[in-house]
Image (cartoon, rainbow, N blue to C red):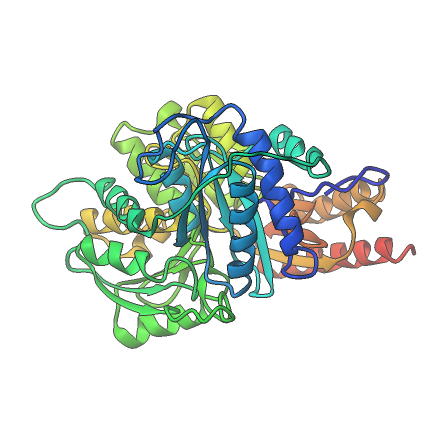
Length: 463
């Protein structure tokens, strides 16, 4: 989000998003793809390196394109593919596939870049477009800005790209996920009954297949996407249905993905939720015990729970903090050579196996860890003393916020008496200001965030 007086940036924290057909039109999708072809395809064309039948003719660059099941994804995919092919890029259409699947296949197929059409955890009316660079990494801001700068430039070519159906390569991604699990006499998830909530999203086929092939008995919910029901009362943003199903079926655990499956959360056998911080606690301590936690450190955002910091301190693990957004986590991991990072929301990056957050990968690793140690998920959750946390979203334009914010935060911190955390930040995907308070006492957190929210509303109203 731009500060007051600055030009608004097209790319947010996770690509270009908006209401499909309104802010995100077919015309914008086409033009954005042409611009991306000019920036990302310029230096990455490789003769015959696509590794997939029809693509890679001549010296043309190659792009892989995937989407989630939103109804609007169909026309946006058509516009993206048209833009890329018209700019001389060969296109491998992956169809409906998790975002991390696109990232993985961008690297595995040696594509010049990848494109995902998804609005992740947002409602069905929204959609988005984001890009992965060579190797399946998220783009730095400078590259996104270069793409935006070329939007107004006309592009012409006499060599058009070819378009191929590449849904068969989903199996490469599935094989990769399973190959990350340790070899042992019996399947790593053997004996576990798991409920998987696929959010009527991109993981509705791949996630149950992966969990079953890893040995689990799997009951699925949220696995009937119709283009309009993605994230609707299900998935990682609404754990109630999963919690109820886990208790009803007597399952050992439940896993919830979001619409594009780049994140996951979990619930234990009693239906109690585990967030990303608790999942990372399990993964980080396991990697440290195995001697595979590079630098004995983990990367998280400023939204991480204070209890996570305490658990990491007790485990002898350093914590590196970044701004909110998994692209910042990913960049810090690459810069420091770290192998684990993530967000409380369930975006978890396991650098040994992926370049971006991968909900299916995370679920496999989490469940394999607890099953290997023979402990229930509830016991694993207790590894982290979780501070009560209250989140409030205040609708409004963050560019209208002024210096008063620092004073409001100081007042809130004084109320917490040094035993908690305060965060005020603009949303990167919606016109909202996000407020977070953590405190040992839940009632105190509620009171402080209520006053802070009122301060924000008054400021936005000019009072």
